Amino acid sequence: MPVIDFEEDAQQDQLNTVADASALSDQVVKLKNVEDAIIATEQQLKDLKKQADKLSQEVIPTMMQEMNLSTLKLHDGSAVEVKPFVFASIPSDKKDAAYDWLRANGLGDIIKNEITVAFGKEEDAKAAEYANLAQGQGYEPSQKLKVEPSTLRAMVRERIESGSDVPSDLFNVFSGQKTKITRK
View 1 (spheres, rainbow, N blue to C red):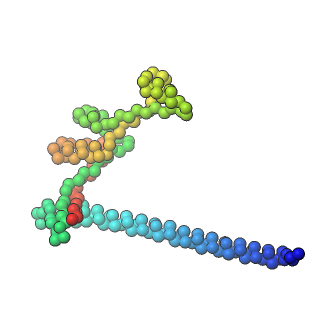
View 2 (view 1 turned 180 degrees about the horizontal axis):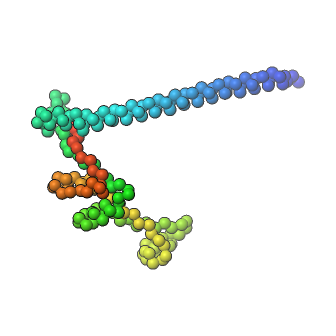
View 3 (view 1 turned 120 degrees about the vertical axis):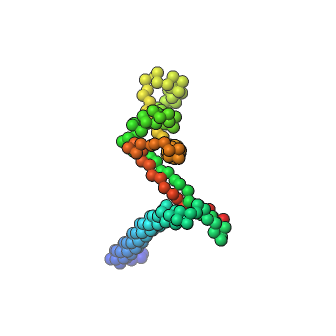
């Protein structure tokens, strides 16, 4: 019968535990380093985007305007063009007033009016019935009004181009020039 040395087994278990803890610690340090690298890379990306925006929206449009250019072809076949752009949004605390203004100015058709009703599990029959009878069955629909961002941008751009006003107290509007590079 083999002899079991319990002391030696206990020491071996402790060594394995120490080795496992060390390996775990190494992996935790690796994870921390990777997370730190991700944070640094994300910050670097933000900085690069900020640089690109400054070049695209300020530096190049100003230089091209001073040179009286609207487009420029490069030797490699790519083209540079400066175009106007518009950004528009409706602040959440001004939605009702903005929607009222849109309706009063004949633009209410850009407001989407969505009504949804939630049914519980296994209420497919009730849902089908509700689709036919709508509110008559005692369910309260939730209503959501919204204007799609691209639709709002297009409306604001059209009004700016036609010389019509857009109230700045109801809409956040930012317009400027942006450089577009068409690569060959």
